[in-house]
Length: 180
Length: 237
Image (tube, rainbow over all chains, first blue to last red; front, side):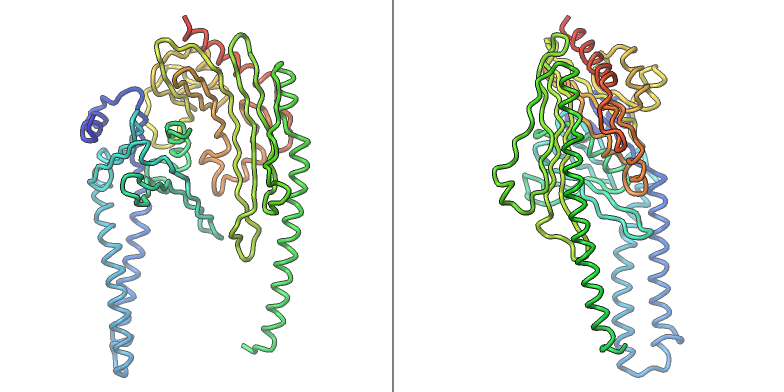
């Protein structure tokens, strides 16, 4: 079966009994969208304050105006980067049925942000659960990472709770990997 | 800031960090000795009439100063006509690149029950905890559907599904001729992050062990082994 066939089968509710389907966690994704939107607003606001009459854009020396341009440009680049992924994630949020992670007999299908990726279990034989320890009020973050054996690239399969908690998905994945 | 007062403060800070890291290391070694005495597998294998074989220490254990412990072993034998293997194994080693301000180590903890069965029709299934976002059709057994899911062929009798549902956790896989209970109970999301404290009072649903009571509950283990035997019997005929 091609990745497209697997995707269509799950969408139509005709998935095989041996497949394990993890659906898009809309609640978690929505919360993250709001957080990133707040960061974007703060960045844009900071850039406007820097350039505005109260900031360096007022009656400031010319070298300060140079710094202001640099800061504004930096905020614009970071803001554009966040906005790009914000738009992609907003599109995913509006089409939750088209986002999924499926553990099939042969490999893992990931449908996310309009892309379909399929990795055979041999491709991700060195998959591991990466834990970034929490600090103070920040919770720990979990992600499943692997090196694609065909391309040698280090990739992330999922993180956080996008398709359910990464550690639970990893437990399910481990029993299907060739080394298990 | 006045640098003449900052320097002694820095020295005091370094001294405190060194003392704390030494004390933490000492506690780790102490826990190893305690764990060695409390390994539940020797007693469990005796009760189940299985032969226990402890893991040998690594050849470089004495010279490797970063090696902390290698505990556990394997129990082999036959349980009600089916070959069975119980594994409880844990290793820990200090990190090669420790943090500046805290003691760090890597560890692995492997626990499993494997039973060799006859599977002429090459059936396969996997029973695992029901987690957020997972999609699985219900089995009709209420206690099972509340806590667990099954993927693959539904050849497990309802009475066994009900027992697993009452346990509240199970990760059982049938692949080829091996029925494996893979113990990833403590690596579930519920014990991660802010839920880590729950581990302290959690009683393992299969082994019956907890941090307070390290001895295994033989009857609990026997009940799960009986379920695995029933599945094995069903597969064979």
